[in-house]
Length: 186
Image (cartoon, rainbow, N blue to C red):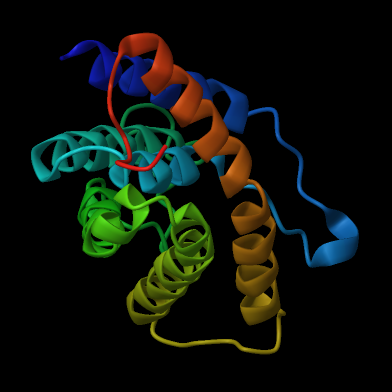
């Protein structure tokens, strides 16, 4: 009963490590495959709401730990505070909202219509990155659409969405090994 969620958390930790080694695609607006958020999104469609909240918290915590932590001690010249840095914890809230988006179509996913969930991962990643862009814009006091940020957000969303069938396949295999039922028509 608890083996699948534990394996899902293990996959989340593994994706956190793998995320560090995935390069950006420079010819495509420096887009990246966001494996950690993708595991949270795909996993959210396969577990209950309580499990999704746990997964969103852990995923957001790990993402912020990788992206946002600013070293508070040390020489101020070396460790200066980034003025556009978002505070630790914002990703937990955004991951939770993305998880609820995936939970909304979970009944369709359980009927075996996983391709809708795969498409929704692209939409959710786009919304996550766009909201993050807006939050950074509010913090620094302005927006710059001339630097290709919207193209990068769109390309990252599409590239990440293309990897969602692979993550769903992995989740189905893990669920089979753990005896967990993901869909009713598997």
